[in-house]
Length: 207
Image 1: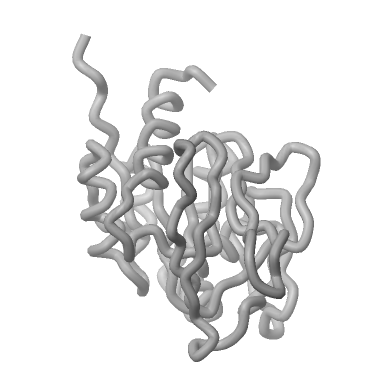
Image 2 (image 1 turned 120 degrees about the horizontal axis):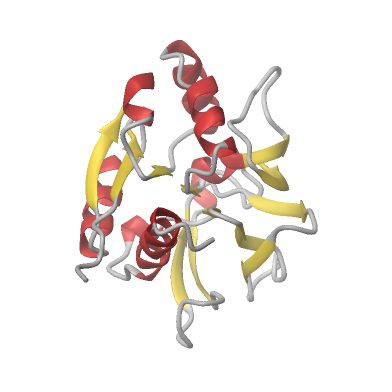
């Protein structure tokens, strides 16, 4: 039997849309951009890229995307958020702007800009559960971290070095996953392969 080719959308409001699309194609997925509510229903899974979480929220509200995204995620659509996308998938935010909303879905509290501003961007090796024995060389840019998670959330990775060692930077809850870092900016496609496989399993109704 030929393996199903998932159609994975990349939310194209801002951020590294093209880079995520290229990485997903390396992982064997077909990619499309998502900007309108009707496009949300045409994908098997969705990536919410990095960018600026408050801008992403305001644009999602302006394009009337928040509720369609919430409904698809509640119905079981797989989704992956990187950096600002992690914030968008969080049920709770710390240090957000007044009235800031998320799509939600992952039972976690995320602190916005927790690792510092743009000038505090850094790279670090992060071991990731289920993605091989070699640590992932992660790129953090104005990155959040996860302050707490619910019982249903699996911690996939933590920062290992520096003053913030031990902070949660990668999680999964069922068909949803998120990272504080930007895997699309590296040549290592393990995170995108992991997500594409998660989408394939959902298409086969395996989990």
